[in-house]
Length: 183
Image (cartoon, rainbow, N blue to C red; front, side, top):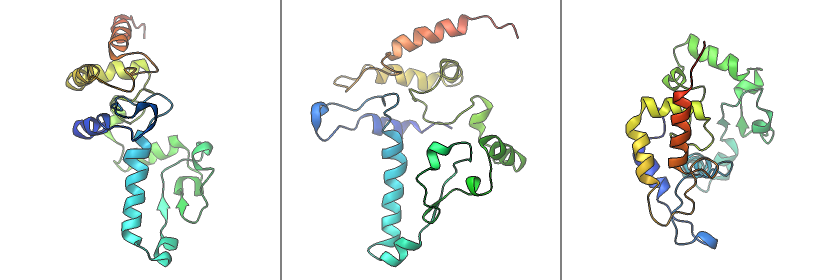
């Protein structure tokens, strides 16, 4: 459902190569500056494509990446050239909502959407408080892991959600859970 725990700990415990944080541990991704996409998606894809093509330029030029970005996400597909990176959703005018319905129609909708409006890493700083609250209820074992990770010495940042520590977010979630719902 969310990124597997072992992968998370591996990412969490990496160290920057240089700069002001050299020798420290990355820790939690910083909201708005997430390295997860770069390290867990883009880099492995590039390595895989290089492995397939090797030094053969003809093969490299023929590789096409089909990426699931919808027509209502223009900022995400503006740099696609339509030749090496293609979104069939954009090509056929599908919005995110239309793609979701099509996945639902064919039984391909991820179970993550049963408890959340978005998928992603289970430690994402961009999750909204209600999403984190549901996550904490459904996966208390992973929330406990966040608490433990937050006590790791020598982190680049102890901020978990836009500068708030896991403990501060925990308090916000307690308040969220106490709220009455009228509907």
